Amino acid sequence: MAKKDPKVSQHNVGLKLAKELRKEIFDFLQYNAVSVVMDETEFWYSSVSDTVDRIFKSSIRVSNEVMKPLYDMLILAKERLGFKEPIDLYVVNNEAINACAVFSFDPKTPHLIQIFSGMINTLTDEEILSILGHEIGHLMGKDAEIDRLMDFIYGDSLDKNVPRFLRKKLQMLSQLNEIRCDRCGCIASGTLEPNITSQFTQMCGVNHDRFGGGVQGILSRCSSNIEMIKDGRVQLHNSSHPDDPIRVRAMEIFCKNNDKKQMEKEMEEIVDLVQLWHKDNMDKHYADFIVSAGLMVANVDGKITEEEISAIINDMIEYKMFPVKEFKKIAKKDIQKVFHKSVAAILENCPFEKDNLMKYVLRMMVADHHIKESELRFAYRLSKDVFEMSKDEFSSCYAEVIQEFFHPRYVL
Ligand SMILES: [Zn+2]
Image 1: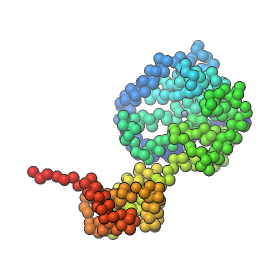
Image 2: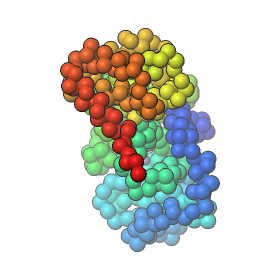
Image 3: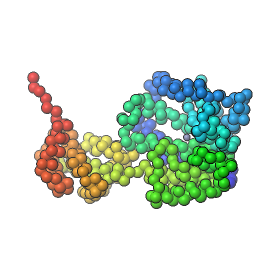
Image 4: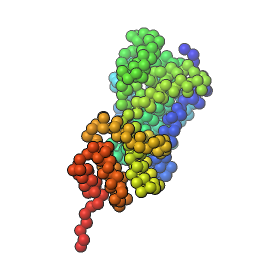
């Protein structure tokens, strides 16, 4: 297969959607303001110090004197990628087929790459070059910055406090970053084949040189797996890395195209698959419900205020990647129709949700701590006509919401 022109490749490694996502996440987390404080603290060093300590204690550093062939590969990969910052490469005695990179935020300290002996003993030189290129790609893209930011903001509560939409965005960005780093692997090794065969070895742990067969076999197997993903016979995994067939196809597209436009066109299929995997159909219906119900409640008094719109958009955050854009799109439609369609879809999927939908309407209604009779009449009508609730069912939803919003106070 044709050799990739490194000059062209270097300008083409990033994916447009990844850049947009990264910007959006950074804006959402107020990166510019936070980084001023973050840069002044040493919290990140303490948070990665365990990993770094472990690498120092359990691994051997590669140099011009020790494991020179590996050292030369690191120099070559850096050269081909045009990356000049210092990197220390460590080898750990571990049979797993794995490698990782630790970004150094201190300009005086080199970045680290750790590569497992299982990988070195199973892969060819070109395959190792592709792995080193991939890890250097993470350093070049400063991918650790987002981990540092998340760690700074959420700390120990990372698992429970990160909103659903942000989790999805981070996971999608991580998958797109992996595709970008695979491209760096292609540049470092110079041709497509070692990237595909090293991926094969990472999938099944088997030395490709001895047992793998031709690269073409892996490519066509991945193509048919992609067809299965597209028509729903196979579900993609919930992971920070894209599924192997997607990675293989993305590398194939990258290596065979030196024309950026053509490459982007062919990559649309891959980017669509990554996005499709993150799409949850029920999310769409919930977002439709929130916007349509929210606008209907807000419009009972004949005027929709800015505060009401921002409250609706805020509620959408859990369900939509781009809530403002989605709000505008949904708000342009026939709101009554959107409302009834979304309620029908949600209740068909889960009939017990009717209480929660009703309570959402009531919460919107009491959000300004002032219940108007017209709003109450509107909510009651919905409970009867749309949710087919009895008076008792409506009353208990109403009482629950009132209890949430209006805490009884003692007068002393
Ligand atoms: Zn990676």
